[in-house]
Length: 286
Image (cartoon, rainbow, N blue to C red; front, side, top):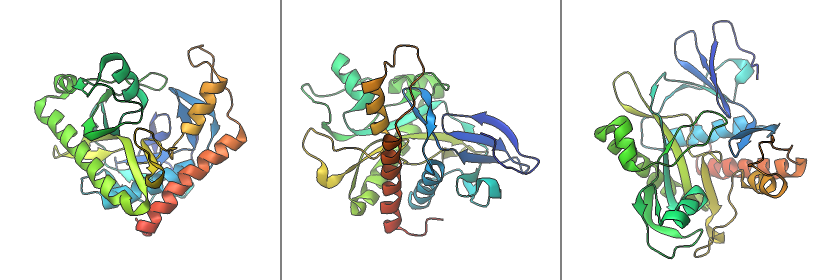
């Protein structure tokens, strides 16, 4: 997407959702679009205001969490106001840092096949939606757009980034997950799983980057709807995934069909509800 930006902003990368520009100050401008992806495809639909919702949610968490993050300023060009932030230009770490408290999604599929997740042995007999004794760190590779992230073991993370940084990634990710779990309790949310990205700043400090605990990277469920070994409906794009699974063969090589308007509207409402309930915890996140 072509954003209205002043001269001096240089486009350097577009991901599934965000566009990144180098600013005249050699920092980065991170712009959250309304694009939505599923099964490693960027869909033809957009979700109205999604980028602004994601940005507001991330800003809430950057303020609330006790962890270094990449935010510099919310003062951005008018053409991207509300959906962009100025951030530090970090050296990014090529690991998706996933933390799970419940067994579902790709972790459930891996557990069915191996009895473990990312090399972590789990008790036998667990079912889809089972709550784990404690949060587990289940890292993945960071794939390019159109490719699939692959779950990897902690030992593989050590191979990629070294023992010290691997331990920092694991411990910091789990600590953030635990912080968020406590913060979300008054909002009536249970955090199922989430994904973080980190970089290293000029001083060598580990820094939370990209986004934080949005419905694009996290599964939220209503706590009062949770049942033993059964997840409640989640506040994310699962409605879109479910529609695609019922109406499209994701292994066909054919591009996904356009999502019906009513599914997009319901998805928008779920994203907006997350933001609305977080704002009741802290109505001034900036």
